[in-house]
Length: 257
Ligand SMILES: [Zn+2]
Image (spheres, rainbow, N blue to C red):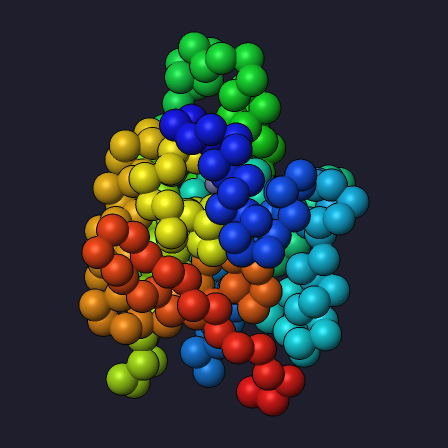
């Protein structure tokens, strides 16, 4: 955290009955089945990440979803935990039948070779990973803009700040609407209550805070269901707003859908 003392972060974790000596991050891509299309929002790591990651295909199989049947992969932004799973370590496309859609702003930032050259050494692996994933299929990748329905029922929302092209998605079906907000916050149990905390992963922290407040205000006012990539399972719920902050109210898990 850039603007918060470790002790304050630990206090917030303790108040949520979370361990204070370890930060557990979960990764939750989403599959939307419209009846005619199966759309995967973000792809995890496949076999490119730590040994505790890479369970998406196993979990999809358990849910009866065949990777071959994914028609569309929609990427929120180009961090490794979203794009690495497009292609496995051996180079094979994990969803070979899917059209791949990415934010145009994100493409412009990460595919700029001059920017990669000028980037600090620590950021270069991220630029290289973008090229590993998209380089061989660059001409087939479809770039999308904000405030557009890019595939039936899914509309893009500018949530930039975390990265220059970071995008959220409103998913509509009949009268129902939910929003997938990707990295609008890291774990929302912590960050909804502390919307002004500057998370190290946010590239432009002030812009990220503005986006966080703008989107969470809208979600609270509309009482819309929300899904976060880094919320603990089941990674969805609602947002309540108070005078100074927000509360993430996780969905109660039930074994019956
Ligand atoms: Zn990210």
